Image (cartoon, rainbow, N blue to C red):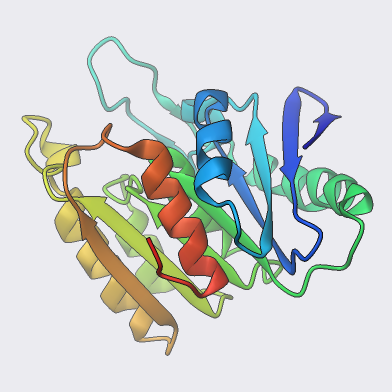
Length: 221
């Protein structure tokens, strides 16, 4: 594992000698080691990015807070994506030691929203995984309808109890994710949509690892 710094962001780069592709994922540091252990034996590198202000930097545009007492969404996703493309990816792949055969982006929760939104903005990623993604985000389905994704494969997942919340915005997540899958398919994109057991905060590392494995092309547990 190599630790790289880019401004306020830390990139923990994991790779094997026979790695072929690389996945970029904004993650809480507490999930990084467990996720990589679950990926052991898979032929890809993982660049886990931390130091991100989730509500401010992972939201594609401004929106009201989701929880009472929380913060409004800052809409700085475009700035973070620009940093990812022009600073983090070049720095990471300079240290990678090989030219990746494919490049993917993955994320959980708001980072899953950011991952899916990103592939509408750039063609730098071949594959994307939105794992328990916040696809209920205000205006996101309308954005998907009006724009064209630049990606070959998308993995979507959700916990089967995530819709069981009194928060009416978050309760729409299952319907929104299902509709997002259909919208992606209208562009002839290969889509896998999986339901997992549990709520939003259950088995996070395992769900992230499963999504990343899907981007490699393997659905083995």
